[in-house]
Length: 237
Ligand code: HEC
Figure 1 (cartoon, helix red, strand yellow):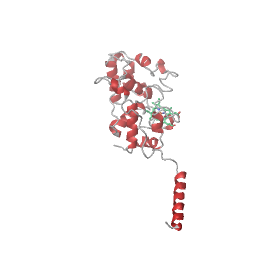
Figure 2 (cartoon, helix red, strand yellow):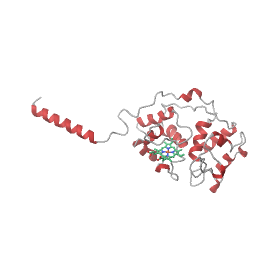
Figure 3 (tube, protein in one colour):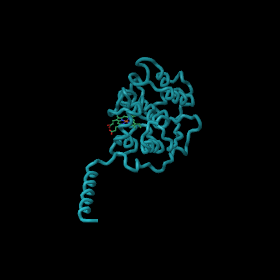
Figure 4 (cartoon, helix red, strand yellow):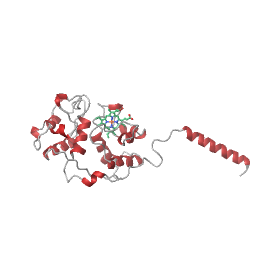
């Protein structure tokens, strides 16, 4: 290597180092977001039997995101004396096995301002109402069984969005933008994938507020599902 070329080489190397030291670290590291070991959900050892609704993993997350927030049915506000932040409190509003005697269920179908959650919040989806219905019909017990979760399944439409819908969208939608954040669709979610706060807020990173702020947190398997989906390019698939 002649001296001139060597100097050129050093210069180029220096420029490269200089440029790379000036650019901020990519939010998603080259190797992807590290997955939490173990990838198997501990809850999977205690899977719900076929069709059994898990209060802790299906009903409570819905209550927390759609009902138990400030100004409504959180302990501080307790609108109409109703608090929906725990099994004990939710249980007071239902009559096991009897939909007609379960106010919690009836109010999902009211019209106008009577409907829960009240407008402008979107009503619960039919699938979400069915979760509550079946839980009441099954005896309204404090079931804590795990839901099937396969962290290799990472379709946005089939796996990721339904998860976010149940755990997050009640507080993060067009009409209710807690923290200024909307998560009610692919385009709305993408900026929080890119700035790292989606993963940060669900994985106990002390830099971010913990999401969801109360109730059951996402299981490791579900967190890994989201991380894998991101590592695979966060596709709208
Ligand atoms: C009960 C309402 C509620 C639910 C449910 C909820 N959030 Fe939040 N979220 C908030 C509030 C309030 C803030 C603002 C908190 C703050 O800034 O300290 C926030 C802030 C955020 C932020 C911004 C974090 C930042 O960097 O400031 C993200 C991202 C987020 N939430 C994601 C989620 C995800 C993902 C879920 C579901 C797993 C979720 N949230 C569920 C109320 C909620």
